[in-house]
Amino acid sequence: MEQQLFLERAIEQYGKATYNFAYRLTGNDADASDLTQEAFIRVFRAWHSFKPGTSFLSWVFRIETNLYRDELRRRKVRCYAEEIHERPFEPIDDYVEAHLSEPLSKALSDLTPLQRKIVLLADVDGCSYREIGQIVGCSVGTVRSRLHRARRELRKLVTHYMTLFTTQRQR
Image (cartoon, rainbow, N blue to C red; front, side, top):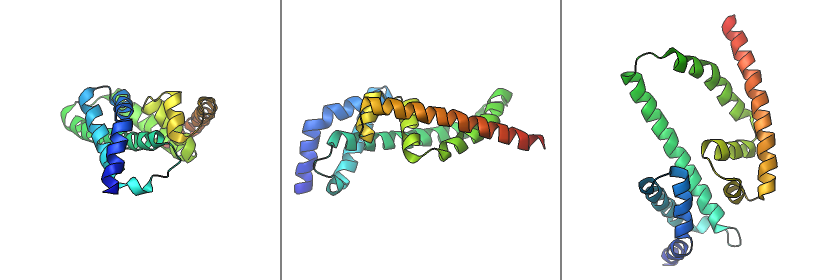
């Protein structure tokens, strides 16, 4: 009963903001509705893990961001698998995949978890600084400086790994 009440209050109070955030992530009504519904299912299941006194919106936005990122990964894998079977050999795509994918993946994994999260929220998910601040729990100014430092570090790491991987391939 307590769990049901928690969910009803959450939907009543934050449903519109949650949907709007989902819409900004997905760009369409159907996916935003699905994402919002799935987020509230997660809220229902994990209601006891919400810490009173913290921002509910940040918590639910984090849930939505993670669900959306997971869906993008699933779609990417599905699309990539379909493309392998349907598209002809495209040397430019293969070159980019071979020369950038591995260095970028390695560079992303070398960032701190917070740097990686902020870069992904900004550059993959397209979140605003305000949204990122709400999700990670800091001010817009802090998001800007952390994102700047994270991107600078990512550029440095990608350059390093591209050089490293290119040297290894030449051997």
